[in-house]
Length: 438
Image (cartoon, rainbow, N blue to C red):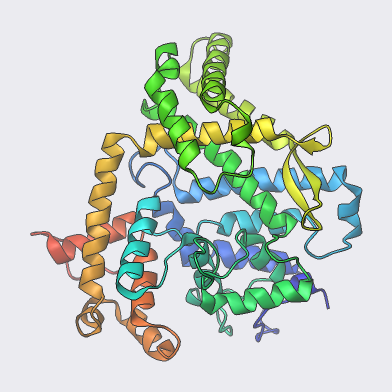
């Protein structure tokens, strides 16, 4: 048996076409799932529905998958060891990487990172259990989504599940902030052990998906920011000491960003150099694009995606006895390019997320999620106003599905618009017809 194509709960072996590859079945199950469709109504940076131009979680996921699949194809031709498939975790199948990229944001609740932050806060404060977007991915893929004949969600192949698992840890461990909920970790850990993956290491497919997510974030979100006027394409904006200070502060305070040697460089000087260089590149392209801002935006984005994607490679991770997907230059990790990408990610963060108007929207989002939580958290009242199919499902699984986790699952599955609709029905003076279908 091919352990990469193993499924945890494949019971309906006679219900599929023998002509399809296992990963084709995974792809079909994912893109036809309600959870995937709901990504079109979930915020990326700007609220879903803000405008026709800006990205949502769905378009972001599609872009990540396109980058990841093409890079996987190139690496497959570039590194001979990949074709030998000596270890199931040291393989790069473009189809698996594409599916993982499409699934990587399923666990995000409405209203982006603010929604995740609020749900985690109320769950931890009141019940001592976490909410985390990456862990919620596995709740959806392995439990919440349903398909005929399966008690394990979409019942995806082991290769795809482990390619989504970029944080290979249990959230039951002390002080662990990202990982997999205890309820799903047992089966994920079982797969990892059967594959003999070193503790704390991710498959090459998971690493590539994660890096391509960063590539998309550091290029596409900036394009949206320029289009929205939050990133002003003039020298004064890019040389503003306040902007530079804010980017530096985000870098210094990011506890998950310690592996690329920031202590070895003058951070303010590098931030200023990267920002000024970015603007000067814009100036040159603006002239060559006949001073059309829209063409210049697209060309800037394309060039940076091409630069980052073209530098992705694989090196030995000798400290772990594994391999690492990263930016590579002359056979060595390209630390300078990794830092450059982080600076562009922080530029998007401080100019978009930290913008006071976005903060106002996030405050509004926090109020809505907290009040939805308060409305549902008491079972006697919550079961009266949560859709019957959800309550029926809870009754079937309540021996292993606590009410607080159930409520978090329900709220986190909402799109931005649906969360606003339910909030309006509960708290606004006017709402839609009671005959509208939920």
